Image (tube, rainbow, N blue to C red):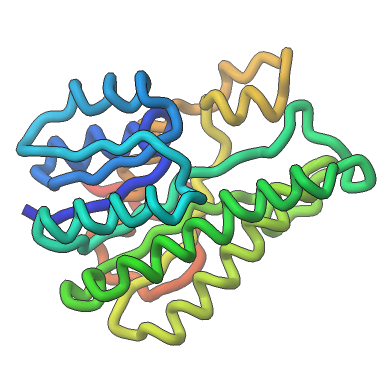
Length: 230
């Protein structure tokens, strides 16, 4: 069975992708900060043995556990860097963004995913693997108060492009999934009704089409991808 490493897998899009890939007989190595939520996801997964590690993806020791687990499972052919942070809620203007908070955003949204990717490269190369970095429209649109998060995702987009140039045997994707009804999206809009946003599960077919297809490395929007049939 193919092996996928998914960060931020305890809720939102990460959880939805974990559930679907497990249904499709992938072996999963999952990460999230919340141990209880992650255990609940692991308990619901179908298929074979799956591995879940609660911890902080910015911690090198924690990342090493994910890499070792993937290697023991047969080697990762897919990495989904989904874990992200807004840094603060409500989102502040750039002028009010605390430097320490900005550093945290960059560590979680940029440094950690690229460090995990680098650590998994030997496995991904051997299987002509794929890297999927979850981006945002905030990476390309100058939304007020989204400067910290948006700039971290813009940097992740560019890091993805560089990695794709350096690793032509891999497929390296940045994906803007669009608005979703998630806890993070609610935190970005505290007190607002976000019930009109689609559930993360609605994005999964488009993601699967990207992972299963032959599109070249690059940045894509989920709404522009053809959904793969179940």
